[in-house]
Length: 185
Image (tube, rainbow, N blue to C red; front, top):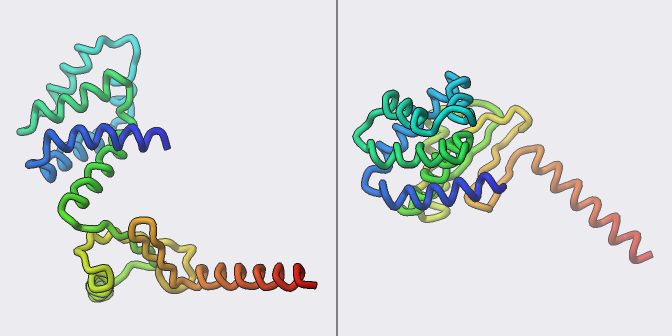
């Protein structure tokens, strides 16, 4: 939770500096993070307390040169200085959310028990967009725990048409009825 709040703060500050180049900046930051994932010892090196900060910056500069050189390196330098490279994926996610909010596009998570076909995806996007009257950026997940149906998350709203969701609703209704019956007797 705290990491998410910190990442959100970094993302907001960084977004203001890269607003005109968000897609390119995200691409470069994702590249940096994929490098970190591919070489975990690299993150260890960046977080190592006995390696001088200037040497770490020189390493980043030599490895990741890009058109947004100053802004991205400034963010990476700050993360290195605070030994916080591990929150970079969360910063990337928050930047995406800020960018979506700025463009009035809603991120929608769609969980299904199997991979949806392109036709199913298009139909689902059309239905959701007409229902909420906004453009959406769908994010698809496969959730094998869903027996049938789908689960859609739009912001804090959840639409669960899965059998698992229906069984949970039924269980809740039965428990309320049982509680109501026991308290009236």
